[in-house]
Length: 159
Image (spheres, rainbow, N blue to C red):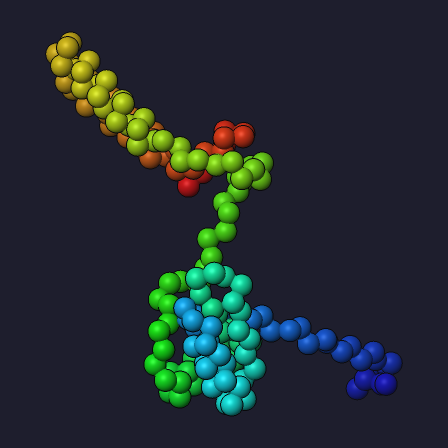
């Protein structure tokens, strides 16, 4: 094949990448999800019922069909008991530094409470309430900067 300037050109073909599936709705009963799937199939939209989760059955379509599928389900499908929970599944949280699954809350609230009690007690005992207030303020800032989660394996903290 020649291009416009008479040089040989190569034809590059792009392979179509499959469109990712997105969840358009979720139901608590598989039968309700099958009704929604039938409604979408009759409208010419390929859909998949994903019942891999215990508490919900998802109806998934290709990303390009998601808005049209939502409109069709709203207009044609009888009202069913949809699940109002977000679709994001909370996977197991892993440590950002070492990848360990051994994580726990950092306990910063308990640490702050301990510092407040000690600072107030020392401030009252020594008559330095201003110093106790400063100590409480500094500890609040430091503990707010520290992370909410702590890896019990490596000690890393994060929010």
